Length: 461
Image 1 (cartoon, one colour):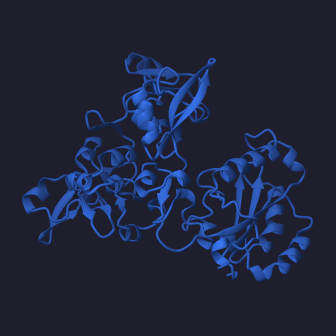
Image 2 (cartoon, rainbow, N blue to C red):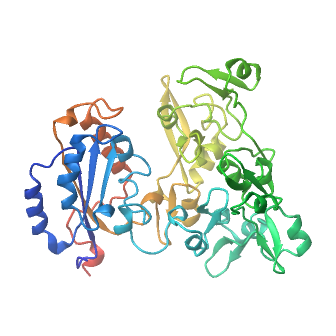
Image 3 (tube, rainbow, N blue to C red):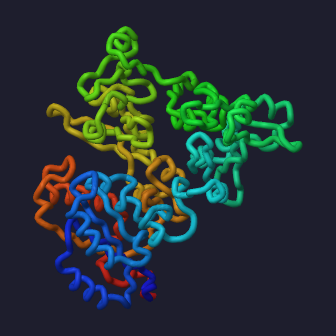
């Protein structure tokens, strides 16, 4: 790697045949001493391959690093700017490009690809419901008293690390308590976490906490209410596509799954939505004590509303309240609710290390609301972890997507053909879609503010 400790990366994006591929090859030869990692993205107009994108592949693939399969990808415009697309996963060690650029070491839980890796990080737990690695709720406890008081999640304070970590849910339970606890089994003289990983229906149904899903041929957890007694009930309930009611602490099946308009409208809690094609049965919407942003049904409206954010981790995606708004404002829909309507609430928001007081104009009047601090503005681990999109790396708070980034100089090259003037998927103009995707991406990057190629101050000593 370069002597200044930085990595170098070149990202080439093209929608068509590279007529000057030779010039690019010559240019790469001149900078080979800095050892840049070269990635390539073919940006296609349609969901499927066409002759233009195939030509782009043929000329771009030879320019990227080996193996080409890991340094090259062919995507449409929507995937380019998606959360799991090549831009946003550039530092994710489990992603196509990220495996060649991400730094080694601890990383956000969602970037561990196996249960073994997940178990090696004390701040993570492996969810059997989603078969993914998630952040332990214990990490959100910022004091020893709060940590040790959380027996539901089996939390324990680590005096050396000054952190709150979780222990195995079923670990150390005596036999009677083990057999009575949902999801725990007594095996080999000790209490263990039960799993529904059986390959046959006979083995599956022998376990009281498992259910054989005939349509899928899979062994799964029994029912929504099952999650109410789990260590992480809300996470596992929603991951199983059930509905979590935090006020009652209950997990229930989703309502409004009617497929006939008459049946839907006959259900008092449902209404028939014909504004979408095909029409669907949806729940009547009233902002709740848990979520004052619930009634914003599209991403644009949701993200444009102070204190709300579009959550694509749920299925289907939903508009949710961000933590600061939820803590210090009323639950009603903006601008009736979601505002700092008392001096006390404003003071509490201002004193919260993860929040700040922001203003917005509504019908000529100024409204104050409690906004989230950007990850880089959060000065301690507790404030950092209060935001799902942030990750504490031991020294600073960074955006989770880029926690695995080394110090890197990144250059992006665009090569556009005439097709960029045409419609790209749902985008009326290729260049507009590309620039909008890049603008949103760059706006969230943890840029250092240093000039490209300059030696960092830390490296000059």
